[in-house]
Length: 335
Image (cartoon, rainbow, N blue to C red; front, side):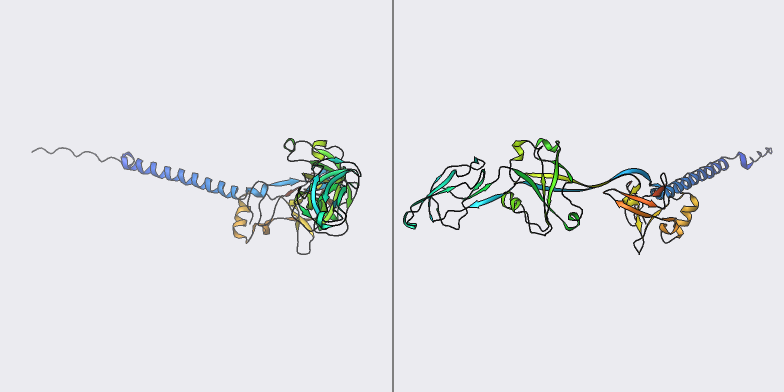
């Protein structure tokens, strides 16, 4: 029996399991690198809302009041008969224009009174707003059988306590009618009356439109621009924007960017640099706000969306649009 030579052993780097191990190691390292980068990116994205900032700019600041009201006659009155009786004739319809002393309704006193028949006449040139009885009804002196209003109309709304402080006669008002032409048309108006005594509701609006009574201050707005076909519809709902005040070209900032301390002093957060060190510090801090630099400011006129910056910031400065425990314009949630 002959002795065959033994085959030489393969060096380890030539064996399949070695390269399989190398591939696995490299793959694992690559995966770890990818995961590490993804984690870092996720951390950066988690704080990207802190880059949501606004810039101080010179602009006009306006303050307006948006509300809704109703068309009402300039004046109206309810009419009563002076004697009881049965209604025998109604000579007008709702919406009719009537002249002063026109006969509107008749009754037969009959057994109710010795006076016999009676006629109800219009006390002024006006428009019939409502008829509250029918032929054949028996009425007495306390029955309001008809409402007559002036042919001229205006708009009324109820202002709250915070609104009435800023309201003055002569203020320009933009009027739209949601039910007419889809509210696309705008009409100019003007505040003509601001009450100084709180009341439950505007009498005209309450009586003619069925509006729910509300507490506040009666305000009247006049306009000559609304088309006749809608201006004469008593009780018609309208939307109003009253121009309260406007400044011209002042340094200003979005209202939402302004913070206030416990003493109600205003300040802003400066925009931080979002980097790995900031993230590391933020993860250790009780709140991200602890890491943000603040700037004290003073403010002036406050509009609907912007506020005047009188000191502390200049045109072009950027600050964080930040609301503690709130949400920014871009949707980021804050700590």
